Length: 257
Image 1 (tube, rainbow, N blue to C red):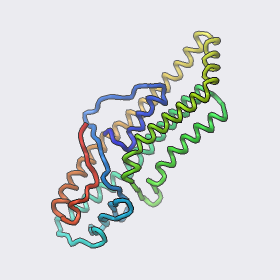
Image 2 (cartoon, one colour):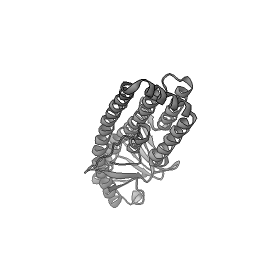
Image 3 (cartoon, rainbow, N blue to C red):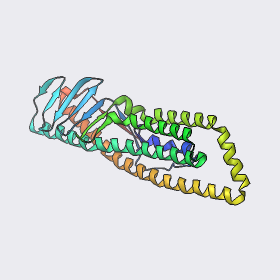
Image 4 (cartoon, rainbow, N blue to C red):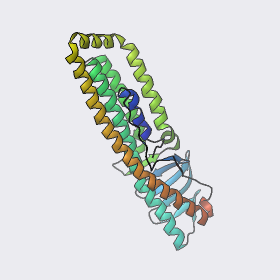
């Protein structure tokens, strides 16, 4: 499931983990696009266009569309309840995937620059600033204490692309500013002889292997979610056909890659 949510973050490691290749073909890959934003709580799910509520489904199978309760047959109640439950299952998974992707990218940046520049406090502060930016992106999405999640159409749709550009820009800037440190490192490796260079190469290779394993684990999680999103899209289509009040409100669009 190569979505614009979090898996794109793992691709950032091709830059931050010294151009290590994480790509592989997946039979169960898909693109998931959020057409609207959604708020998810234990008591209800609410689909929004910006701040405007399009419809809300409560945990007692009641549907409210544009502020009005919609009368439902027993069969329609089953459909909307299935739809609500699946979204409530998916929301924490999506949020966790984003969080794990950010953690992976953050660890890559920290490890690589730690190996390159050691205990340089100024560079360490810059690395911490990059990580803080990542973490700020997901704060509005998750309130685990209350079991609430907010998946914004804009933030989720652009998360991977925006962070990809941001981390690449930050890394290029740090490398440019720290060119003197890089030459110093190279000089030390050269003067320490073949063993010093081999030791550095081994460290980076071991790091790349660790990152690859974590990246593959995220990829497996995303593939499992792909199936759930396809199911959600089908339920949504059924709900739209059965209930005219929500017929025009798409939440997800899924396409195979």
